[in-house]
Image (cartoon, rainbow, N blue to C red; front, side, top):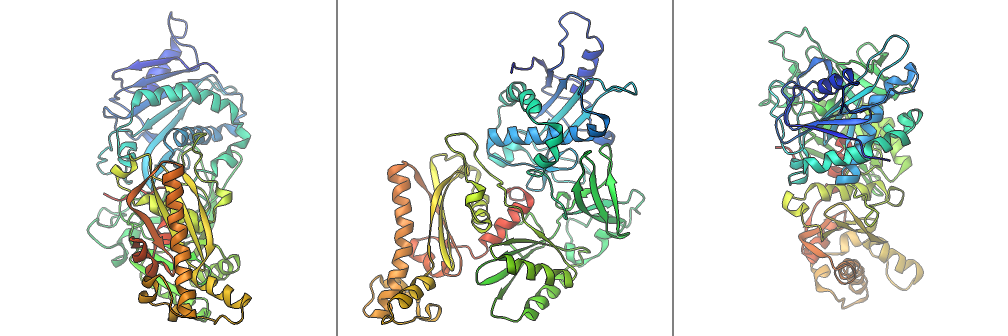
Length: 552
């Protein structure tokens, strides 16, 4: 597939305006014929949807790709903005190892913040469509200061911690976009969009255009979201439904309990986590022995404000009461509980209890946030990782600093020491080097008792003290069994280190081992690392937002 010709400008009012002018003078000499690409280093009149200005300082990407008239029938034209979004998300994932989130119909997000946007335009004579103009604005090296905007912006340089070469990215689109466009059948767009799109049942809201200035539709940035109902004055709430085959997005309006189909051309709804001011988030981690529920007053904060733990031995009424109490903690009108789970039966129970208490329950999809896609480093395979391991990995990646992300030959180890102990080796670029799964401390000692009846049964939770764990060798049968279980785990971690350093010639990131799980608190000091009790919960938060960027 040949590279699209590139028209490079230093400044222009709008790349799409300029491209449209070129089409009008198509018979003039040296005028490019579609497909071609117009790129400008700056725009003085950049346009977004609904007539909004697109702030276009030097340092970001502003381009318009001009494609020949599309053969898709009018009923499928609404899929074209989504098709463009999918292809751009795929190219950026391949190039940077990041998975963007697409908010219908044309927003490019990362971590709940706006990274870029699309504007598709064409002409029609009533029966046929003309050439397709795909305008793209992408924040690369400058995060715009949006005055009076209703969302938080971000940029690739802010995410990656380094500047991005604009010319290289222009060449990427000129070289690969057209081939990707032709390879993706328009009929397959709804399925492809699901990999990147904000999913069904997610909460959205729409601010009333005639809301009183004194009754602001946004909370004060200095006020707690949970202390007042002011944020909800003049606001309508809805839940996303399915994406239809014509590209329209179904929406259930909660106040009226009606379903509407959003037009592909215009809508005023936005994803709740794309708000300018703090929006709360609730996530649940359903493990093998307990349910942990975390509440974040601000979804962009890496630290939960409340954590509730429900052991399976407790009565269901305890969990029901915890959900009721948590709901009362906030004036948020339509709370949603986002669930990561390794226990399907417990997922059904929690979903039912949540709905009884006025929550909506959403299962977090198993898809990567950061994934290196080159052939020699394919990242992790989703089918081979449980959602809890995936969440723990993404949480660890979210804690890396910009400087650490540049250390491409360094790794970290994520250890979840629970009923089973999982050990995952991860590169700072998101590569999954592999891992180990072995019995947890309790399971290891129980299995010895079961196969060798003369060995005692040990209630490890009560018997394994920090002093025994530190001594390394046991002086009687019971302590020998406990010390062996500890040393087995520590040995597996150290063996993982040996392989990464000796066989792969990688370097361990300082303080790069991260420990979580029920036994993690006792094991962490022995391996010289910190204990992160809420690692999976924070990873669930990252997966919900579709990004690991910390707030300003």
